[in-house]
Length: 576
Ligand SMILES: *[C@@H]1O[C@H](CO)[C@@H](O)[C@H](O)[C@H]1NC(C)=O
Ligand SMILES: *[C@@H]1O[C@H](CO)[C@@H](O)[C@H](O)[C@H]1NC(C)=O
Ligand SMILES: *[C@@H]1O[C@H](CO)[C@@H](O)[C@H](O)[C@H]1NC(C)=O
Ligand SMILES: *[C@@H]1O[C@H](CO)[C@@H](O)[C@H](O)[C@H]1NC(C)=O
Image (cartoon, rainbow, N blue to C red; front, side, top):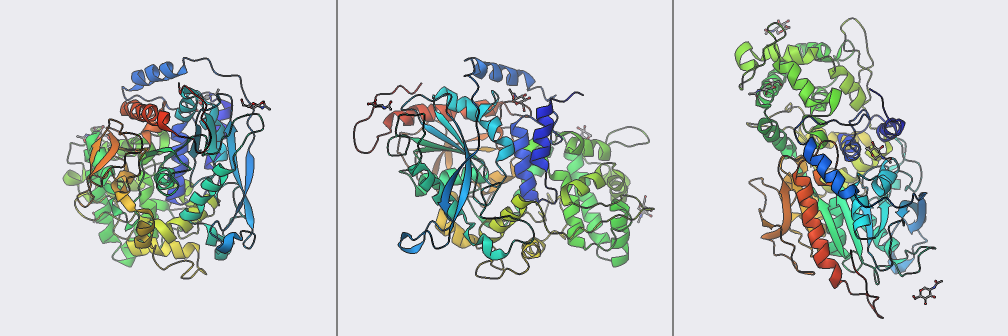
């Protein structure tokens, strides 16, 4: 297949830096999916029967002729490392330069400023797509309201770092990497924002600022609206796991549910049977060593059970951004392999093959899956041979080397938790050796010299929830959304888990400034969708993506007219 050069370049740029944590891969893959691209950079051609509705929505939005091309260069703002310095003496800890991009082409005086927050990734590979590509929901939004668009890079990611970030960066450097500091950055930036070419006051006292984010950036949308309501006038929080929690084994429950819902139930049963069988094999050192070689080749035997358990998780890496799709490394490929009997070419019935042929059969099929070693090598920065006659460099116990992974590991290990350990129980998909303790060990493997209080033994999730409000947070002028089978919905206010608060979600935009009680929420769960599916208009989408964007637009239409500039008069402006 012929590839547009730009797509390849983007893919390479986004996926550069192997040795990434699952979290960093999640973010990168989500950005790829928003661009309508497969993990390898090729365009997606969904065969899900939803392609038609995609084309329709793309056409509706593409109607107004694109504004003249504008060359957008990255810009930098100097910010204090410590926004909360005593007596406002910010010079003490020094400053850093935070990167951002601005699109002015659609702007008309008086219109809002829209800020798209990239969160825990290098913002560069995605920034211009987000601001300028016709298929970008963010660009469509900025155009619709004649707004000014900003793409914002989070401190300690991409070029917005106080210095180089690699495995040798001393822990003290990360002292200023907290969600609190990063929110204060946006506030400080907004209050001094102006443009040479625009004769209008763009600071939040005169211009409404709208914060748009998916995933961690969605949490930030909610927190900004809560903590800086005079800076951020409204926000869109797509898939926001605002509840900090150390044990996020629940991550894999929506994967189980979704796979069953989409017709891959046999595969879930076989994965479960295989994993449980492997867990028994790993109890004895001799069989454990043999198993690891059977999967990853010579040189894999000495890996610990928990790190081998990490390797078994790679089959799920694409789920949250692509569902069972995603090309070579997709669950579709994997499940077709596991569920097709090579002798008869028959696929397994609903109960799977393990129930008929024994779990050992499924374990062997998995070990023979041609892409498995490749996936492990790609995602975990190894060079396992996958071959019993050839020794590979297959140490699974490695620090992450990708700078975004290092920074995100700092963030989740100190504040947010989100340890994706095994969901033991009826929907188990992950080896029991992927325990909470193992996840905690990964934190300390990455930062071995870091100690409390700078770097706590376990994430301080209780403190985090006290500071930010967890999933009971209900700021006004905020729209929440989430995907039915999104692993991250489990820790968001829209969570359906039995132990979650279950507020009543409604979709008619509330009045401007109306705060909801804890038992209500202005939000929407997209059916047949995973993570941030309402932020894309092409590729793997859900028809509910457009529905969700509609609720957001309806809310903006209701809220924007009641923006009151502080001090002085307000120029009349028609929002559309
Ligand atoms: C917009 O993005 C799509 C999907 O990534 C890509 O195929 C297309 O070439 C981009 N358009 C422009 C004008 O860059
Ligand atoms: C900016 O706008 C104000 C108000 O409309 C006007 O009085 C002023 O002349 C303008 N300045 C420039 C440099 O265009
Ligand atoms: C069984 O697996 C095959 C191959 O992955 C899949 O196409 C089929 O829908 C599955 N059937 C059931 C009942 O789960
Ligand atoms: C499991 O399968 C492997 C490979 O097919 C075989 O060598 C082994 O003897 C089997 N073990 C059991 C307990 O059946």
